[in-house]
Amino acid sequence: MKSMTGFGSGTATKDGITCTVEIKSVNARFLDLFIRSPKQMNPFESTIRGMIQDRITRGKVEVSVSILDAGERPKTFTINSVLRKQIQELLVQEEFYDDSKKVPLQAVNSISTEWVQQQDTPIGEDVLSDIVKEATIQALDALIAMRTAEGQHIKQDLLDRIDTLEKIITKIDTNKSGAVEAYREHIKTKIQEYLVSLEASISEDRFIQEIALLADKTDITEEIVRFTSHVVQLKNTLADTNSIGRKVDFILQEMNREVNTIGSKAMDSIITELVVQLKCELEKIREQVQNVE
Image (cartoon, rainbow, N blue to C red; front, side, top):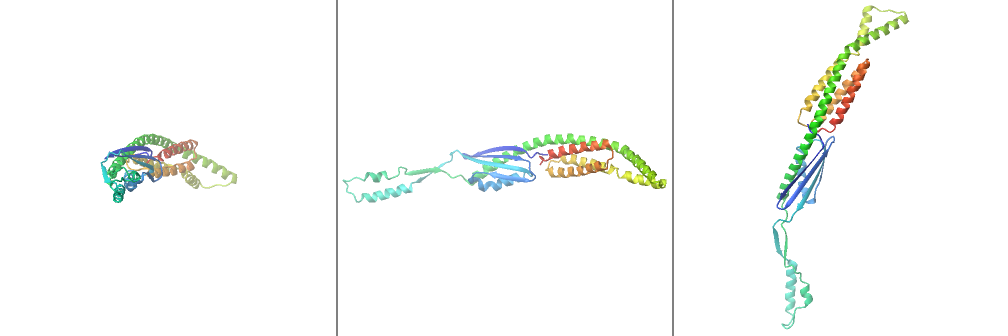
């Protein structure tokens, strides 16, 4: 189980070019990926995006890519074409002067002093591709390690809260029989009082049958069984190493549905209080799960 919150960075160097990739993520319903990189790295954004999508399924992910050129690549040298043209023009001009005359000073000053030009060898795409991939892998490894560590803390908190849920539902199960019987007696008394006020009567069998039907409407056995089943599902899901956030959300919705039904059926103050406790714990679990991938 992983959290959706984390940070990771990676650095790779080749031929004097250093690439640094930083990745940070926060919780989001789906995968929302944003990459910020220099213009020269634009061709590799699809590669970065694919690498991230292969390993992350949920969260708002921001990627920052930077390049540092140390200028340590081999130099290339070329003849200054502008200078060559200027010299050719000057030599042509010299033919119009006598040997006793000198070349005009302004003509010499107009000639550039850089006869040979030098420049860095262009950065090869293969170099950029190699270092951006290596830096991205490092950053992803660090990010996922942090998300995993945080996920384990969340998992332990969830397991503790699930243990609390089990204790509460056990108390409800223990109290349900007494609550149903108490409600049965309550109905019986009310019906008898109502019949007396009307000076009416019904057969004993019919009387018992009607009371039983009304009392059965407050029976929460099925809801308790389903809730307990969802607890088992929740535990099993938390043990999964894949993305589980959405599945846990669904299970919690089902658990809330059962708790609401128990609350609406319960005619006992003790069970009503226990239902409130269940809802509080489920809400705390739901809040934690919002940060689970």
